[in-house]
Image (tube, rainbow, N blue to C red; front, side, top):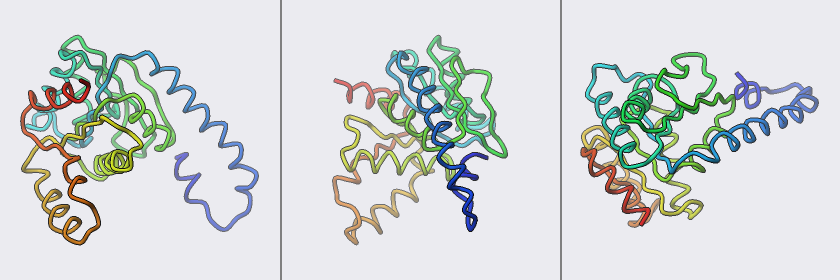
Length: 220
């Protein structure tokens, strides 16, 4: 994979000759993403596990969130893969909304789902992450694994440091996220690693209507 080749090579000096040329490929990913996404409607990114079963409550929730966002006038952006990402794309598509998938080259469990109106393929995670943030007005995190946590904490850091503003971050599924929130409030906060206002950056809900309300009110 391109990310692996860029980040994992050690010992040899031939990177001096190959890495500068990789800059052109990286640049092309940014240019393609900017060109493709510049004219999409106001959008919300929905994250969640690629391993979410189609017959699960999390999949149904993702589908309902995608539909509700579409009806509220938002495009829906996901990682374009299966599971929770497919659910959100599907809900948006079925409700007449605009459905976007930003796919990433992975060795397993990834490929654009059939509910994507606009799909873009990326080799580099950091180029893809830029598109999620630049073209979204909010992040909604369904239950997920390392990838979902990666996006969650990157967004939190960007909001905490003022790099992005008026950007709600919503965790959907109070029971799933309870342990993480308990750790944040019980370990990070008491030891001064974060400040009390930082905790308030996270919205937690089990209500699809609440998701839409939080995002809509943030735009006013």
